Length: 189
Length: 338
Image (cartoon, rainbow over all chains, first blue to last red; front, side, top):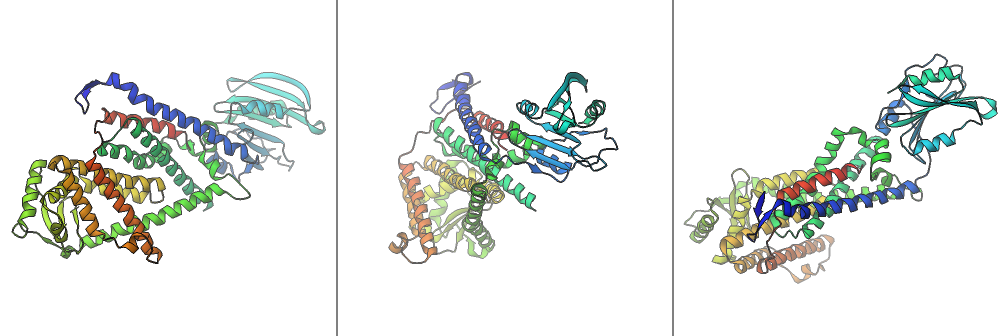
């Protein structure tokens, strides 16, 4: 492909291509770097408070993705979650906290971390006080880590965590590991 | 209601930011690529108006999750919502600052663009202000028009006379365009100046500027709040005028006469009283009017100076490929600004 410029010189596209592609590419690269730096400012100034939502649907609208919920939901748990909270710092994470049907609070919590870097933080932050065992179990065609231990006041602390698609899931409960794995295995989507 | 207001503010913030980024990139490339031809600059600057209008809904339709926190927090290069919601001393200065800017731009758009446009449109509806100008009434005008039309290779339009005290010349109508000229202007210009002015108006016809005017008006109405669009649309008008100036000069070969005609026409239309020029005549309205006239006169003088000292018109080749490259790269970049 060749063209004549205004002075009548013949130019080929191959010869002009670097001049056509490089300046906009460099400008875009500079802009991308600037945007990245600009994005760090409010992130560092924002307070680390969680935002709570009235319903799963409202939280889904804010997140822009479907929230994973268990398809297996035993009668001894109360639906909907008593607390739906979204925190941005130190990592973007949604927490669903469930009560028991008899009114006992915080018997099951499901955390969904939407950042590859955030899962490490959460796993270190939510450890049992006493670790009784840690094993790898198959879950939904993947490997998951099951933690059996004791939490505050010697209460049971059973936890399973694994990566599922775009998020890292952590489910913690007072109920036995068998029930925990049934709930975890039924998480949709 | 609060969520709706936040969504609308978010949309406006995003489109203003897209316009700003596009404008900065386009202006930088106009300089890097040394684009001097006004018609080429016009095409590049049009991106500033078109792309934000096009990209925001396109991004939303193709990837709705882009509006959510997961995209904003994890994938986006820049989350504008974070800036809008940033608390400083118990308030959100960026959100309120933006709203103030949008409101000021809206007022400016209504007062300086929409109201005068509507007034002109309504006035043009009253056809009694114009009458057909027959050949025998002004043989000099028809001869000059025939000469210029022949040089430009297009038929001469119908000519109407504007019953105005002030000099005026413009193309009226998009589907069936006519040249409207006032007798005051005919009296003010000599033969060469008149040929230049007529060639300029015929250039508007050749470039289908009446249609473009409607397209730009619709975009401006859609972006009434956008300060970047306001500034760029004014630059577009200037690019358009300069493109027609170039056509007029190449058709007549008389840049000096055309420049003189341009200045005469403007100064006869806006007689400058010393008090008005200095903005000392009391009320705010007359001061604003004086400032506006002064700015318009500067623009006309700049156009005239450009005619007398034309910049090099060697343009970089592959203009359309450049436009596609810039638009595509901006699409990728702006996708990650939510």
